Length: 129
Image (cartoon, rainbow, N blue to C red):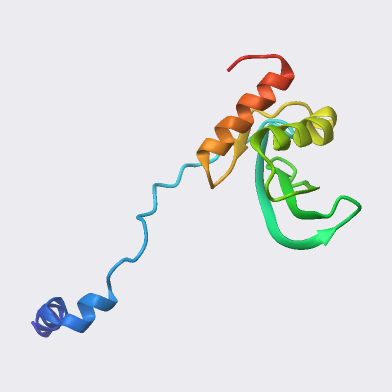
């Protein structure tokens, strides 16, 4: 009985209602990542930015590509303002030439960039999506 009274009090208490509000976007449903059957079939990629300029080209970011199958990372120095085509060329010249083309790229940000990246990679590969 007293549990109901406490719950009712918190529902009507102004300070409790303000402090319990959600302040961000609602999170989407989690989707299970399919298990890759071979290395470099599915990769995860993300950028590390805000780095001090380094190297002879003053790189200020790093593209990190991780193979989901073997958990092997590849670190590619780059600039934080690379376009989708610049990134596709970097991946094409430094990764795909050694590993083959991926079937899936997992990114948690900017689906428009990921779409443009896929389009540019397939253009370099000579195929259409």
